[in-house]
Image (tube, rainbow, N blue to C red):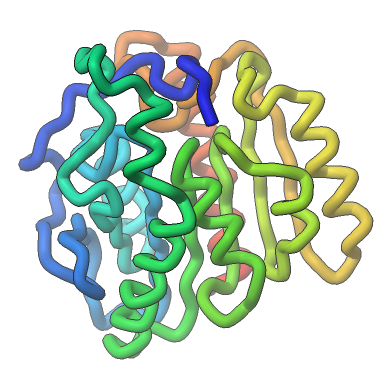
Length: 240
């Protein structure tokens, strides 16, 4: 598991960003936006930079304003990847933050949401987080819809095991999930007619663009917003 592209354009982390608040859910410190009396939740699983990324929280706020309880747990336990720490390259960081562990830690979060009265849960994963989401999607026990945005480390076999409606939104310039791999994902899902799916490759953008865009880059911002709407539309179709 390597690849510097998954780490490009690191965000300026800000623990006070967003209009929501931080509380503990299922044993994890979580950024929460929206009201807990909502019946529908979207679980956000971040990339390697974690839950304090302002663009990620801004997206959670956007999803909350559409009528969802948006929850962004700190699956990285206060230890996001730091590209400036040359003594700890991404390969070493990944060893400390396995996606299998992320998947197991998501389950009590999901259980906690159900105990709040939430009846349907969608999960969206970005880069590292996409692998966690696709693992949760191997059964309909935990989530009812999945969205993978510029996934990292996701394999065709992972996709073949998916049991819930899934959308995969990828970048044209992405060696973590290049268009050729996205096509293989699509073929694997097309062989599963019982699973609703939507695959889309965004031209002219690179890995991480949906949450690591620069506000001044109008073209990328536009593509990010289009991906956000596609994701939101997917959840509106399947968990509302």
